[in-house]
Length: 414
Length: 119
Image (cartoon, rainbow over all chains, first blue to last red; front, side, top):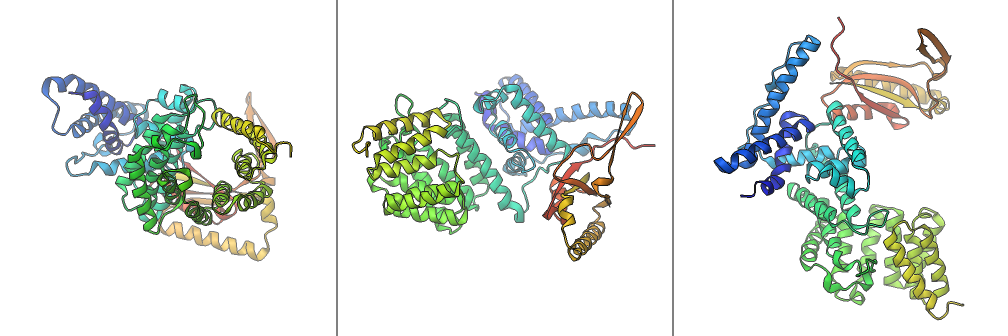
């Protein structure tokens, strides 16, 4: 019997319900830990209860009541106020009837509440919903463990003191709040997939956690097209994980990747979800990006890529969610669909706007289209500009390799 | 639970608002106050005289020291407040968002600390 494994799997569900019952993150976490210690003692002897989650929740709840009772009598002495009955804080749960999944949804929305700082939302989500330790989260985000611990303490303190509600938002606020939740999940994934700085290339554990979270949210809110869209997008991006880097750890462009290394299961599931999101007519920020990723994934060879479709989808994305980065991708896709000159014209417009002055992918995209036109000297200048502002070592090596290629090409002197 | 809604705006901008527009905003404030009074959320609310009337006082070594002006120069100044009763932060935020100045300035939502009653 693997009590440790069972605890790891069931902890988020038990914790989510316990937080609702005792109304406090720290108390819930601590009491659940104690309940687990009791389980380790008793279950090998007495056998695992029929409903282990309910057992853990109810044992932890009793421990919480004891704790609150002691604290209340202390408070009563200190402030000379009548002690409240712990039952008022800690209602008797009806574990057989209440669906525990609802509590996990409450927990997700609370952890991703807009009143919390974005980095705190991410940390709290990884801590409570994924069960990562403070050390693990600190390592993943390259901050010292005490800093991460402080961040979590501050966030939990704010939830308690400002009374951030522990509930799923009402229908009229759901879409807006869901987009905050999805942003957190996407942030977790991106931190694993494309770290913002340093030499670390990939942290697949974060990608796995993000996909697990996206799966939860999609399962809990099956009618929300964007939840499906995000899950699809993450699966499709993750499907290329094994092909994105060569043996020396250098980034391999989409065009040059060994497509036999792409994960067919993730592509199949992601494409299915993306198609459904697109057909629903409500595909948004994530659904449209997933559809684009699906088209890339379905091309057996780079030359088979349906760039016209991709350019159309980017145009839709640009209309619904205008941003300089989307405009950049749109320009690159137009360059592939209608010829590099058309793409370069769009990139020139972007360059003049100055919105992406510090973004290395703008000169990198320009360099790529110039290279395709055989204008090697201009391409080299653009690659050098990209190298000047790139922050990530892996991408730096990729750009350096490209620069060497165009520098060797004929026409460099021209 | 009690929350203090602190209303911040740029006083210099307010000086450039036409009289007709100022009257309209005062009307909106009256309407808002009445609405949250009727819904049972209102506990208190006041507007403050301009920042030019502010004095900062400190007591060091038993000696009060008063100086002109606010503690810190900021782009937006405290211009008024509401104290409300709300069931949680989401309700407090929703009420704060209805304050007319939320459109041009900003509202800081602060939970009130529970302390033993003064007797």
